[in-house]
Length: 323
Image 1 (cartoon, rainbow, N blue to C red):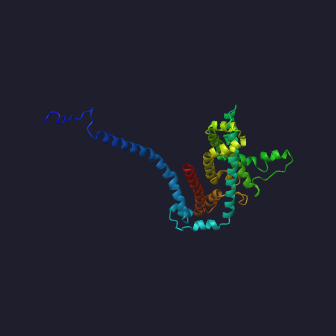
Image 2: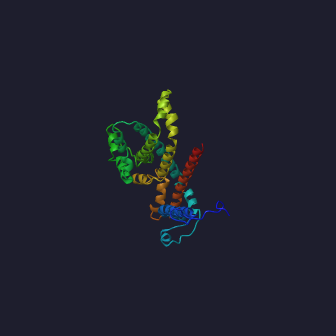
Image 3: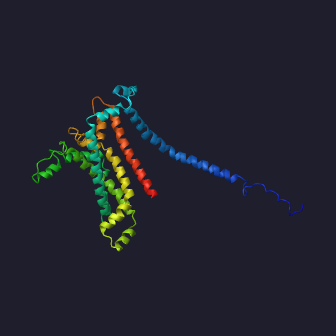
């Protein structure tokens, strides 16, 4: 055999020349270590969700399907009654008024919070002196604890010693029963809730406005577009994703508002400001003989409503991404 046809001798594997397959093993080891690291990061948040979301939801569902009393709640031997608690809630004379109050409270609060928040966001969109300071001042209602804000509004709207009636008295207006009149109690808590929720809308919508490229407005102005046309055809469409998440978060928050209503009116007088949130609390904890099952059933109805709107938002986002 000639020297040309002889195969060259194999060189032994060294550190400079790794053996065949060594790179694949290192890649597999790196992939496994990255997987373990990913699971390590997911484990705390998974444990948190299970402990503070999944388990309470399960317990609330279990409460709504059993006939719990104080004794059976402690001993854990409540009989299973299925949908009886839900049927009891639907047949309760409080269900209709509470549903109407919840709808009015949620819709009116969301509409005014969003409209006022958008108007303020447009006002602060232009950079001017003291803009940051004024925005910070508008955040005060949002930063205050709800018990402080609610107590302040209850004091301001007090029929005898409230500053609102005192101010109206300067113009010869007779004292108004803001919190003790069945015709005004719901609207009084709505005003307080709007005042508390406006700063959140302002912050989120202002961030959305800052993300819009100003070149688009300049091009529209050069084409002769008026301020209203720029707002209608540029601002609103480009702000739609931010507006959708703002309204969704506002809806979820407003549905579960309890502190404001309970501190100001306790759902009264005569149930005139009772919503599902306050009704659920009263059933479970506000009576000498608590009704844990029906109270949990009302709470689950609120969860279902929030879940439905959350799914609608996800569907809206998917359609938008596919468009």
